[in-house]
Image (cartoon, rainbow, N blue to C red):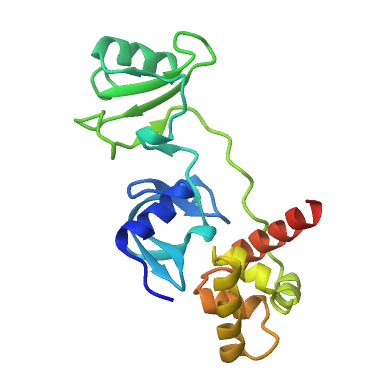
Length: 224
């Protein structure tokens, strides 16, 4: 498989909602451990994100976008963009912020002026820049992280056999590419590759995100 270009890697990440600068955290954790993506790379056709100041390199399937940090492109329609110091100060005061007026340079707000306002703020000098990070002034609902696997459950799931369809899903490959990758996994790990073999082949750092993703894909395929 030819190594993709930087543009192809970036486009593949963007198709899943990830961009450089976006805050992410492990799917088994929450936004308390979030940090921005520094760059992307590729392994076996799958995109990896380099984040946590370059200390972490994870597959996109292992990560979730932070519910507490957003870049401008992540805001849906319906959010007002405020840059007036007076309006920003009033909006943040309503949201419960105790920062002195002028601390925040801009705010993005839905339902502005109501008790149900959803307020996001930034201290960036250029709040309109595409790389500007906005932080929520109230807790945002986060999807529940994958449950921590007990040692017994992890042992059982690690031994489950994987299929070409599993490989296609986890490695985000076409059926033809998945067939070739499956044969490569067989060459390395034996004729009956397991979940742990797929994890090793894809350089997954945790078993739970991969298992959760594969099992969900199997269920969705059965329901169709």
